[in-house]
Length: 445
Ligand SMILES: Cc1ncc(COP(=O)(O)O)c(C=O)c1O
Image (cartoon, rainbow, N blue to C red; front, side, top):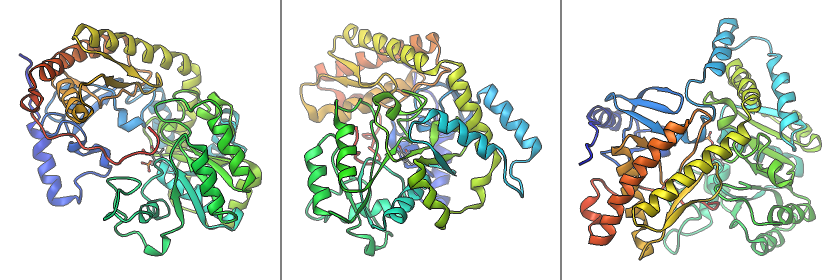
């Protein structure tokens, strides 16, 4: 019988948070209901490499990694040493830092679309900067989007596009409460993979669309020719193509998905993993587009902070030095092989599917409506066995063969429970928590 870890301190803090912090957490993906609420830990006290220790002193193998913001591993000694050294020399100066130029050169060398660079402190913020630049350069207001691009008004206005009474918001789970209604009709979502719909949308808004912003990939590589087709359509309409590589960048290729598929957008947004957990984001792009940003009001005090710059420079150099692309392939493939074996050994059919950088559990089920229960049970049973994950896995370079072995062992236990639940029709009885929530329905899987 698997022992459920005591997570009482986590949930005592979570109750206190309810009194003090609207929504309890700063990032929706960190809410307890995104995991197995009541079983999964909510608060951590320290993290190192591939593991963290929660406030109840339980240790977990971490396959969430600050929702992708950590790429080398928690508290990486090389990045942290560079940051500590920088703190001793000043975390922010009165004057500008030469590191801004050094990192811009590093980004220009790594990311195909990068000729000029602006910095921010996060991904959503960088998307907002990219939207501003695109609108400023083209003199057009409308933007077509495909993916998640942050919390800012320009983007959330997309959810005015559908009357919630008559249908779903494009991003189910996000209500545009507080977003100015005057922005309705400025941003339009399009489904990933369908060039005809995009072509129709661009025709409908001919001469008015400043940009197409999209996640070029998430858990799967794009269908052959798709991104090439998108770029062609955008150029036919004199618009700007922006790839949001906040989540897909760095792991598959250091230069992003654009490097892997050979399609170069006009602008790119990067953040998260570029700095191994230190706040940082950047908008990079072709000179012809980016130069105009110098005449726009795009300015903020902490974009000149040295910590993110030092962390990013070191992270990108360490990714290269540690041969990240090959290592991520090895880690992803080894995890896939182990979990696939565990699925078969537990008497189930299915596989870890998708890119090796973000493999996702897919079991063959008798009825698709059982999937939310099965996925929640998986997260619950993995948590009970000391593994913190969604029904998918995001590796860091700190994950070791032992981490993979222990994760596969935990998965075998979790999958046996799932098989039993499916066989006896006892999934409900086995679930010790409510069904985990999806933060919002994504357009790019
Ligand atoms: C593709 C994409 N764009 C933008 C963002 C927003 O980044 P941040 O949470 O740093 O504002 C995210 C965050 O998950 C993302 O996945």
